[in-house]
Length: 320
Image (cartoon, rainbow, N blue to C red):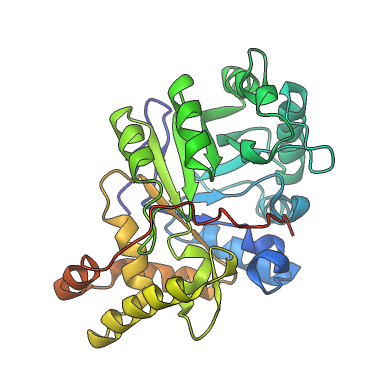
């Protein structure tokens, strides 16, 4: 696959990345479980495939995601050549503390779990859920520590990964980030991150657009799941998804192919992070990326309304 460079970091990434929150077994978020063997088989399949980015977090499944990835890395004796491991600094889930000390401990915990001595990409994660945003943004806070970790050679590129755009954009303007991750906020149903992406693209900040399927409904369809962005979809949201499904069905196009390629074809987006929960999803993702979506589908989808509101404004955040 053609790869895109991330600034002057020396890293080059494929247009698709694989996310691993589902592999950590988070039934409260996704509505299903993933056992250890299934997770490991999926991680092996990722490492054996053409995609060169795996994204995780210290707090996905309270550490299970990194532990499962780390077990596979240990089995294989390391990661494949030119592979990119992306993880995140996280708040303490009990105290919600997210100061500089916690940021460093988070990376130490990640490296131990992953069986690595460094990572390629390191993000500061979900500052909006910390006990005090000032602990993160003040001089000597968690963000300063993030850049210090990069200076120490523990990461090649650093970024910020979060949801709330109104908090994210001011932070993005104050630090020289290499990358960012936004999830659920640039999909067929939502454009909440549109202005954020415009700004990042102008600053040459690499954009990772996560969750193009809006938590699953834009891949499985509304008959298979009632969850949209990890919450029960309301009547208006369901009507919108059904309109998308109708257009795709009329042209015999998988809704997942349209949802994925909506992100892949955006020139601002460096890589699209797709969550996978079993090995078969890897092949399916690649097939959807290669699927020839009829021009008529794009024309008709462009006529549909979309939301610019925060899609997770009512979400009860869980890490399990």
